[in-house]
Image 1 (tube, rainbow, N blue to C red):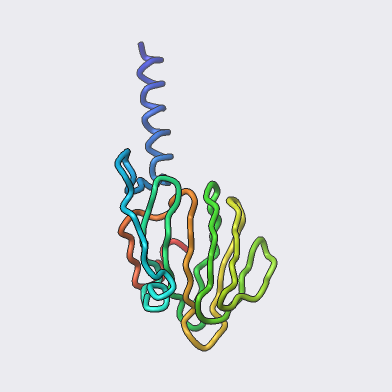
Image 2 (cartoon, one colour):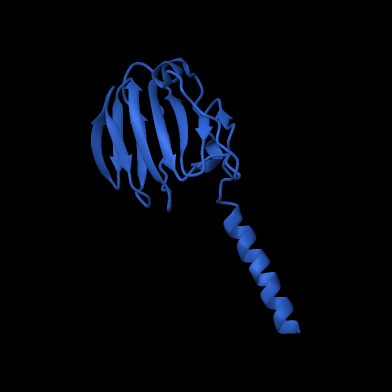
Length: 151
């Protein structure tokens, strides 16, 4: 009996630890809200560091605005692929320590498990659209500035 109680408690603890890193998308068996808008215009007008646009069962679209001299912050998504499309500004991409330039119309694919950061080295805000698969942020996320506690 004690062994069964111990195993039950361990399962609850483990599931709680893992659930902190899981994002619940809008999709819960019902249809995801459809989206058909000018995403380039939305990205150019965005002044928030990060703003979730739509989240589906398997992916999520987010727009970002990185201030001059700012960066996204070095991070690694263990089980999420990230695709970034740069709309405005100039900067550098750092993927697993390798640096390359980014500019409007550049697309960067970051496979899950890749350490990465993107820095604005230009003289205007760096505007981008990013797709996470699976979703990375809670639906409705709007962060006006870069959250310091994450980086």
